[in-house]
Length: 493
Image (cartoon, rainbow, N blue to C red; front, side, top):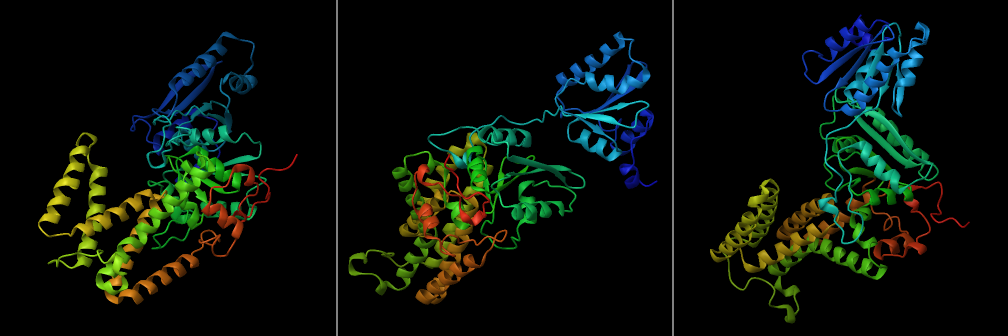
């Protein structure tokens, strides 16, 4: 019998055979963390298999203690051993296990497996206690007011934080395992009476067809199987680490994908305009929410067009009105302006990456070096002009103000293309590049969803909700782009 055939075969009724399987296939007695606790209960051999570090030792000890209490009761016959043991497993989640493969998967997932001599069926008990951090506010999605909890690397905690916000009997969490070797837990979340059935089916089928050794990069690997990203830099799904944001999208009719070991949740389907909204806008009064949203829009537009437009005016000063004649370098430089812009952009990215990898005690020194030494000295020696540093810095601030980190990076690539187009073709180059940019975005479809909705195809009511922060009582319909089965979010009772 091959190893694959043995995995699918039913469990042996002899615990010695099960022990041999765990020794051969899971490396028991070689890997220190895979172990077995052998007991004798009611003259029956009991084996409990576990992985050290993934189980709650206190609960396991309580289960063993309860099983040993059975030896004090001599009334049970041999035929009642299985029922007596099942009754003494003090845990809310006990499931039967019938195959070797299922037993191995449960143990490697952090559950314990109880094998009973003379029985071809064991029990899996969910006593998982994964190592990890406590829920805390995500660094990239901070708000002034609002909850301070955030998703962690534990998928069980993440689904629980979502369930806490949506106590609806129609909320569904469908769990599956992906990866032949990693067997990573992946969960699809949706509201049964709201989410589009066809989209749920598409996502489930895409996940079912993933054939890979493992998911070491967790959610990002899953994303690349879900959507045909290719070399398109613009994000086709939205990530969030905030349970309140995830719950809001569930109520709108979106389908979410949780991946174990990742604190980010994948939101599908999403459009370009899903990436320009931030939780802070909904934690303030509508007027201030709209004000903050427009500031973010201004920052995004600046990150895309500020440096290309300034460079265009430098190349062709006749485009400027007399009142704006001060724009542009006042002195000739040894290094071409286009080279300065590109070098400054690449330099900011280099400093950002250096800051990420700089230990916290040295981060202040890193900031001083970047801001004072490099910037000021580069201007003094003539490497950069003052205006180049100014406009590149403003564009960088606009990128950081973009709510979606992925969208901010994609906009940076578009900005570099605009600068190169202006350098070669000036006004026609910028016009053509902008036209191609809009056409490219309009051609993108994420899970059959138009990327520029509600602008293309045009939906005035939905576009108004994008441009302005509308009060919750007036937001009584779900967005049509998710094809909700129930359009009303506030049904009349």
